[in-house]
Image 1 (cartoon, rainbow, N blue to C red):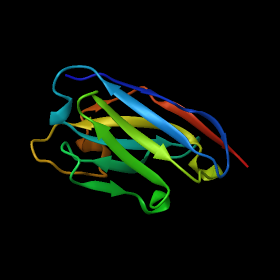
Image 2: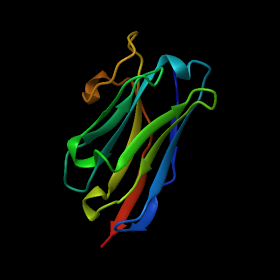
Image 3: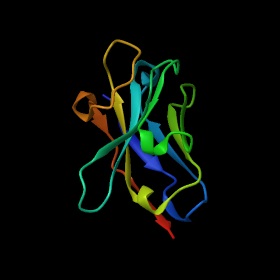
Image 4: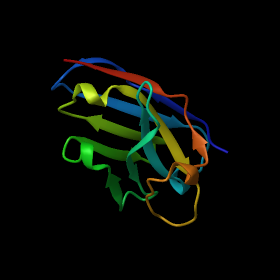
Length: 126
């Protein structure tokens, strides 16, 4: 089992940058594919991006391509989300999630993730 703790959220102006971190407990972080999701008030949770366990594959939803970058440091048991050129529509609670499937892959399907963090709030002001 793995526990995930997000950090780095806050208030940022439109056009600014923010970096989220997700620290994982345990010694098997490198065996998990990781993803970031977000949920805005009154909306369903949506996929943002994902990275495979050995970081050979990344996947992004169209609305963040070219602005957000997902990365991971397996030595530090941490996955990151670098958010650049943020927009008010990026305002949401951001969650990281871990997918324990054996393959090194990425998926946008939330039900395939086994573990979730508690979330961190990102608010973008216009």
